[in-house]
Image (cartoon, rainbow, N blue to C red):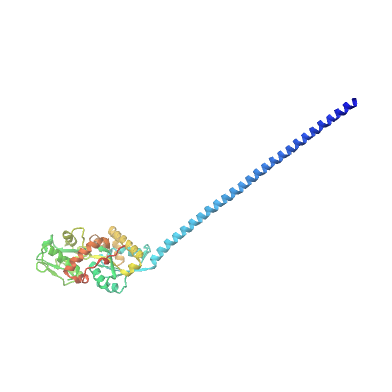
Length: 391
């Protein structure tokens, strides 16, 4: 019995020990599994962090690369733009514009442009020719030896008809430059000219027709009421007034200024431009000078023509605003022989820039008056609408 009790007690001890061992083993296995799971989590977390770091780095590098590409594209675009601008400027200067102009008021507005071309400040390249007489320009224009020319407005119409539309009027550059000069103080009104001898130059020219028109509109017969002497040229007429040999003369600028400077008793008695406006109104000024462009040249070089006209307008504005400096440039480029005369003449030369579009009505009115006097003064017929250049 005792032995049986010992055996049962031993068996119970073995069972308990087996259960305890199994529990410990199970707990140990669970702890190991937990450790493995925790380590895997850590490893996965580190791997995720590494991946995120790599991804972030790749994204950062990609963003930086994209930004660099954008900057490079922008630089290339700027280079192309600058290249295009440079090409445009170069292309404008590649073509030499041949410009002919008259000495005197018709050419005075060109002085600053001539200087800018000389110094390289202009965006166009020009070759200038100056002449003293309008007739010297006819052959050059007809033979296409020049691209632009400054000349009297009636001669522009003559050449338009002669070349059958080969030129276009680009702008009016000079209004009235005619004055009645007197040594003395008898002429203060247009009617005071009755019974007087008036020295002038160019019978059958525009100054002649304008004077006749104004006289007739004031009920003065040019054939009977006055004696207009056309025996001399402008320079000779000016000389006789300076000496006092002739008392009354119709003269243009800059002869008027020259006479005034050399004979203190000589004065401007009548401004023909103002007399014209008394009849026609201020909205229809007396347009005496213009600049024309070869029609074919204009059609093939529109951008260049427009750029030239823009710089020409700026030159006119400069001359009118800076008399002293402009006078020096006018002498330098031999448009007039004296800077002093040019400086004093500018205010009375009516130098302007009126685009062909703005000047059309004024010119048509003048042309109709000249046509009534003599159709040949315009080349036989009035110019049509194609005569006027349009930007």
